[in-house]
Amino acid sequence: LPNFAVHIFQQSNMSGPICGGHSAPLDINEEVLQITTQLQGEIEKALSVDAFSTFSPVSMTQQVVAGTVYHVKIDVGTEHVHARIFKPLPHTGAAATLQKAAGGFTAEDALVPLE
Image 1 (tube, rainbow, N blue to C red):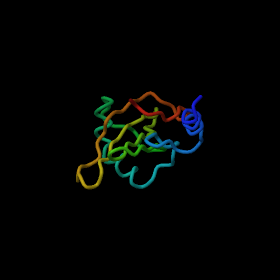
Image 2 (image 1 turned 45 degrees about the vertical axis):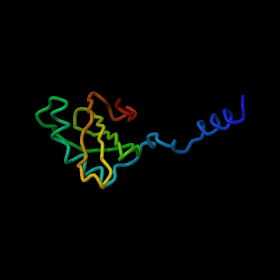
Image 3 (image 1 turned 120 degrees about the vertical axis):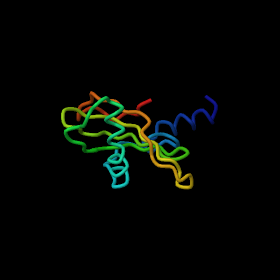
Image 4 (image 1 turned 60 degrees about the vertical axis):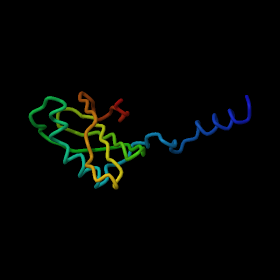
């Protein structure tokens, strides 16, 4: 292999974060807890649920793009829900928005990006 191909291969097998990729699963921080809680109604609507019996975000990943994409695992009582939330860059003045939500997950299911 050419030297540049070997270098790229070696970098792609590193255990650290990948530029432009999602982080490893993280504990929920205060900012994402607040954003997710504010979007609870939209998440319920996206999943055709009147109201969750409980709503407790438990873990997250983040990806920095032209803003930040958060994937959040939420304990809603009978199952876990995964939500993709986009937070625009601060200079836009725009609020975070729900991009996608999916249900039917368990506490043990890995938090993988919703595409």
